[in-house]
Image (tube, rainbow over all chains, first blue to last red; front, side, top):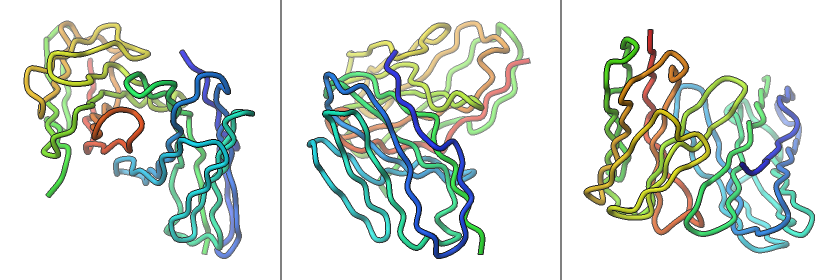
Length: 112
Length: 113
């Protein structure tokens, strides 16, 4: 079973703060790294799928970077809003048709 | 509307009584998979399927069976459920394989007494 670690486990910020989380994964046999946003009582929704070392992706105020050589990805949220409150999951796979291993997530709470 | 559906959404059952949780997608996706979510353990993959008649074990397959007779359906079978299978279950699908985003179903909350 592959080891995918996310930190911090939880985070509480004020509206307007910028924040970032880390996802660590095995640096050998990298294929793809996913980020998902999971709101309470809903299903996880994809934010990004990243495949190339040095990749940077952006969706609105959320962006992500990828370093496959050292085995980490950062997710950034600029100017956090209360609606950003959710659990953010990353998932790693080492081939195109194989298991997808999720981290335990970072729970973000943004207070007004 | 493109979606992944699961049924039932909630189920309370007793130890040993066989059950099936259905999963269906209308996006013509090749890859489908089942996950369970437990507090403190994150999402863990149970089984996945790369296409019709092709299935493989994920990280926690013990006590579960799956089948993929049609591209759109991927049922999860618990032949003899036990209390440690009480969990929140998600089905997901994607175009191609794990290099594309997964689309998740709404989840099935299973309680085994």
